[in-house]
Length: 300
Figure 1 (cartoon, helix red, strand yellow):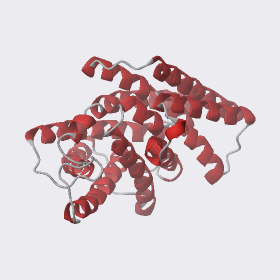
Figure 2 (cartoon, rainbow, N blue to C red):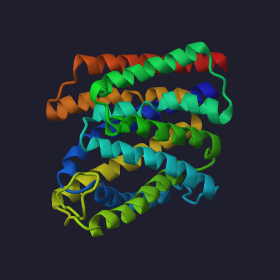
Figure 3 (cartoon, rainbow, N blue to C red):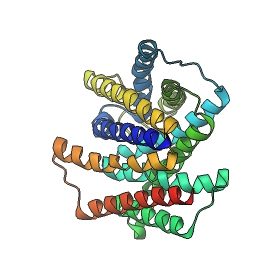
Figure 4 (cartoon, rainbow, N blue to C red):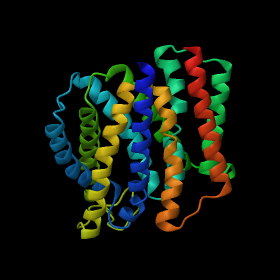
């Protein structure tokens, strides 16, 4: 029974990765129109009605089974996604995604720290290998390393924690309730932060993506944000369902397909070909993920 659930979860995770990598290729275009917090506010305004409609059509409950646990899970995932989107303003999708989808590494480590899961020497080796692959894709300059360069890895820590919490404390929540929790958390946070960056002295409507003040929304911004919101609603719901029915470490391996899809979409849409180092890093990441999944199954 668990095997069939894991197969279904793997398919959901890959479909979500294909959708997310497509829509995230347009975040840089959004960054030319408005700031990060305005983007997230409008994305939430577009996404919430879609989720309400989806809940009605699919007859899925949106009411939380355990509100405090749902809030904790939503906070962890949302912080990871906010860090990831901030990185997308300056980095290619595959590079920012390499940090976010280092999550399987953190899933195993956090499983050991928070839930007492024992890690073997081979599992630790697989974790270190996967981390090395992520560094290859990120192409970090160790001689000029800055905290900003490590942002994608920080996104992976919080995202991995959120996915782990999905299985352990939110398995009884519906996929749409899990998705709604993320959008509401991000949207609420965006209202406060957008107000701060817009009202503070020296507010800049042409500043960096992360700290840009409110600007009048353009038709292009609204169209790009609506497209992003629609894709995100579908993808977040798919991945939430995947983690509800599948084993977290197994499902997280198939999220690695995001990196492959991101490179393919970047090439098809913008003609941006990934370097041989990036592809080598992706291969290392996927291989380590498969090894982690196999070892966890064997250890279990």
